[in-house]
Every structure is written in structure tokens, then in C-alpha cells.
Image (cartoon, rainbow, N blue to C red):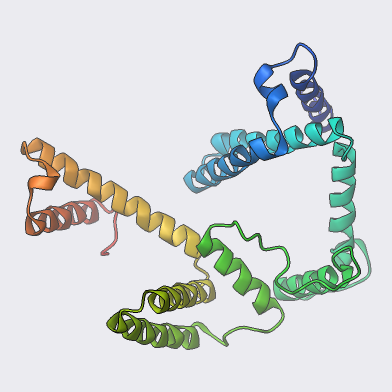
Amino acid sequence: MADSAGVLFEALLSLMGRLRGEGGCPWDRAQTHASLKPYLIEEAYEALQAIDEGKPGPISEELGDVLFQVVFHCQIAQERGEFTMAEVLQKILDKMTHRHPHVFGTAEVADVREALGQWERIKRAEGKGDGSPRSALEGVPQNLPALLRAQRLQVKAGRVGFDWPSWTQAWAKVREEVAEADEAISDGNTARIRAELGDLFFSLVNVARLLDIDAEDALRQASDTFTRRFREVEATMTAEGRKLDEVSAEELDHAWEAAKARETSRGGGDRA
């Protein structure tokens, strides 16, 4: 019979302590919160890739790697007298219980929208620890990927009523931003071009969000499509004994369209 999750979690904590202890791994012993930052991000993205691929085995493995990073940070903090895993677990248990009064208390919500609205109200009421109120935009890290950060900021603002009524109004705003970007480009003012293109990107994220499209995923898929087709163009040129930098723009465009047509005929592409 398999061990319980609790027993296995204790075993993981013990393993981490041994890796960091006397006679443990030199690399693990040398790590700090700062040095581990890239690995936490990397493991999170590997988990996202596994989720996109939709295979339970890899998802399980990658989530384990993310959990290991959490355990790693808690071990370092415990050694430094900062906090323990028990404190981390208690905080998240208390937080989730407090923010779900419709589950653990007597409050009632009718749907997802009401549940999210209640969550935001409770979170703002909790304050920031120094007595000051939380902003409705609290909790969106500045170092998130830009598209993801834009979408999270818009979601947060939308939960307190600051939002477009529908995607059609947001799309009209995109058209307005395109015109302003066109003017900026015509003027040749680099600072204004940067600002207007930023506004255009932000507006496009709004439209995607209101159409229930994740902007980060949409751009990631577009990048994957570009990579796949570009490599097919490279393969075509290699098969013909030619180098990309020696081929005319017109020939490259023809090869690109051919690659796109082949992908579409196989049912694996769009018409972009």
C-alpha cells in the first residue's frame, strides 16, 4: 500500500535537510534564496509546458519539481531562523479558510463572479500588514512576463468594476490605438512610438481577455507556429543546397507560404 501524502511530504522535508546538512551535496549547500530564483521560474514554465501537452505523467513530475523548489526555500529559511515549512503551511491554510467564507463559513455566493468579487473584498480588507489598505491591483508581480502582467492587472481592475462592458468596445479601443501608433511612427518620435505601441499591446490583451483568450498563451502558440514553419523553410533550403542569407526575400516568402500550406493541409495549422 502506498504511503500517504503526509508521510511522503515528511520524507521530502527530511531529504532536503540531508542535502543541505553536513555531508550533503556541495551544490545544494551553496544555494541561497537569490541563487534559486531562476530555477523556480524555470520549473514553473516546465510545468506549464507539461500542462499544455496534457499528459498526466509529465504534469505530475513537473509539479513535483515546483514543490521541491518551495521545500528548498523553506529549508534555507529555517536554517537562517526566518520561517519554517510549518509556518508556510499554516499561513496558507489560514488565508484560504478566511477567503472562502462561502465554504468554511455562512456566506453565500451565486457564481464564479461573486466568489471572485468576495475574494478581492476580503483581500483588500486584510490590509498590507502596515495598516494601510491594499490596492485592487495588489499581488501582480512586476517581473511577470509583460503580456501576463497586463492581463492580470486588467483582471484585478475588472473585479472592482473598472472594465469594458464587452469585447466590442475594447476592440474599438484597439483601432484607436492603432491610429495613434500610426501617427507616432509618422512623427518619428521614438519615445512616443514606444508609448503608443505599449498602449496598443495593452489594448489587445484587453480584447483577448474579454474573449476568454489567454494573451500569453496566444502569443506563445504564435511563436511556436513561427518556429515550426521557419525550421521547415530552413529544411527546404538545406535540401536544395542553399543558404538562407543567400536567398531573396521573395523566395523566402514563397517557401514560407508553401510551408504554411503544407501545415494547413495536414490539419495542423491556421491561416495566419
